[in-house]
Image (tube, rainbow, N blue to C red):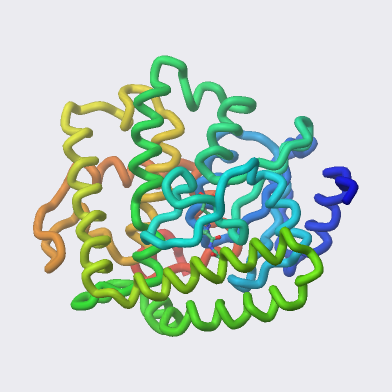
Length: 330
Ligand SMILES: N[C@@H](CCC(=O)N[C@@H](CS)C(=O)NCC(=O)O)C(=O)O
């Protein structure tokens, strides 16, 4: 089959956005990128925060108003960014492409309009933005240190924290505790229906099949108490180790310069707070007794950044949780 031009595929994906009233043009200049994202998605937040720190103009399309509800035109566009990497079919509670594979039915997806290129995976996307729009976020001398931090952030089991409960202490926001039971089953049902409707496109059908396999594995993971306990234990260790690295009095995580690693730590730490895990650094909790004041101070400094506020905390459609109520007046 002849390849359609990218501009046509972008147009089709844009027309398929389920909530066009949530399309947002950011910045006054001509857009450099089109971003397909979801307000609450952690990986989307990483990209929006990087774009905000880079100060570039782009158009954001919220494609995932109803998780599991992916339009074939969005999937076709995303598949152009896969570049031979294998699909993720297992589940470890994290979403790093490097270790898990590519999930063809997720956000974020970035289109670089001048390069006519589709870029997927938040880590690759953020590096792409920094390389072409904000080189100060990845200074050459700090490249290895930044990459090490990105490995840690990407390997943090945030997905497990959202979809699964610790068997003894479900610390998550009330609304999350209410909606998550049965979520994997509902998604599998919806995905199976969508797959049957797109059986004539083998590439899209293969994407649905991989996603269904991954959702099945996810259901198994969150219902395995030892897996959930271990994932929470990993979170505790990650924050303790972050506190230790901050121990030499450095201003930012890679030294005295604010970098991409700080942008992404901001998103990761805010998610921990949002989900009800600020005790990871406050301590005095049945799952973590130890306070980590350096992480507390680092997080506070990151959350105050205007670019972070506009792209994450106050981005339209980001639901509030009782654990971040202090950021909102009403
Ligand atoms: N490694 C990918 C992972 C993407 C990913 O897992 N996205 C999640 C949100 S952070 C998602 O879209 N979940 C919704 C779904 O599975 O339908 C990235 O960083 O972009």
